[in-house]
Length: 494
Image (cartoon, rainbow, N blue to C red; front, side):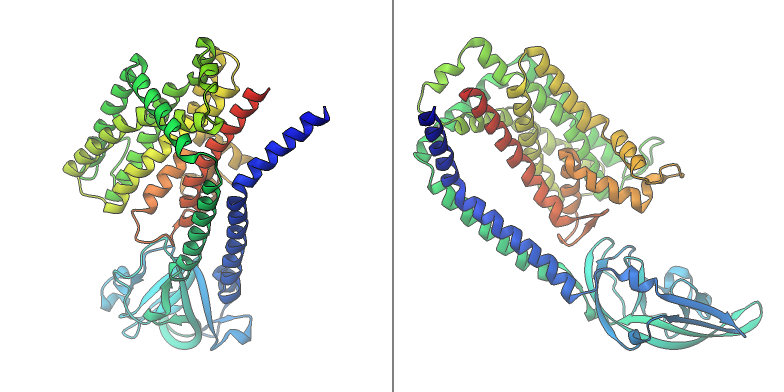
């Protein structure tokens, strides 16, 4: 008994030795991420709305006064960090110069006049900041920026009910050059974290015995699964459904950019490719689960697993090879269908950003690999063929169809108001739904495609930072593959 425990401890120690550099790298990345967070907390004000809410407005004796409760803020420059909630606008949005002249805006706290007409107002997490210049083409909605703003006091006059009213208002102002994308600093941290992770992974891979031989075994297993899976009637039927559906949806979404539909409405160019990614996940995940649903159960029935284990191949290699092979079975036909669907969408409508199209294709393959490895976890855990099918169908229904209903139910439990009209556009609900969406690989796929329709990672995806969505899309397949490997090794050892 003691000998068995000693051998088991040595085996566990060897496994930890192999992946020790990667674990150390992840620990260092965690420290860097904390430092990143602390950097923004120390160097910027990350809650502009808390300061904006200190405003006090008084009306008396034909005079309106807008001031801040904290007198120390006046003439003080603060660097704010937040999200551009609306597209930066100019006075042209409220009419011509003659109409704008003398118009009092209570929310912005100023009177639009000749002096302000050439400037623009931005909303940063709800805080209004007057920018001395135009931001046309410089910044866009939902981008995360830093703004060096100064609180000044200005006097205006406006007319209300035929009375001349004096306005004394404290306004946050900034110059155009005082606004910068947050990624100018973020990329330093992200780059460092990527280098640390790559170094840790490289050192861990060097510690694996016979790595080249194991990769050859993984390649052979993958090619075997690919040839076998591609010829199955199940794949032929599911692949045909996927192909027709994605090509048809691409054509429809392209047409909706030019004409409205009573059910789907009108699509924007960027919205079309995000919507196409949703349909790709809905059908792609079904095909991925359907193809890999009984992989290990079939091996048990045919008693071929023992023959494979008799060869000098690691358990990790077997799972990796099967995952890669099944991903190719689904991924190659899916890739062709995606390209043709994109072609028809662009032909019928407008071309989305190149980055979003590349993300749609590349992360589509990552999504398929994720769903394959997720199903492998279920396939290894199931004890019978019927259980495998039930597990797979339940997973697909959860992620692809009933997820929205689950999010609504969870939002109700935590107190988010879903009874209002058009509650889906409520900021609280959107933030909650986006954060919970990180638990769904399909939602993450849509997020990253939407992320690459933008020019920067410093963007807010309805409550989720762009970098977090990008990190999640890689963490999902890694965790699923690691879990499948652990389950398989446990089954084989006991």
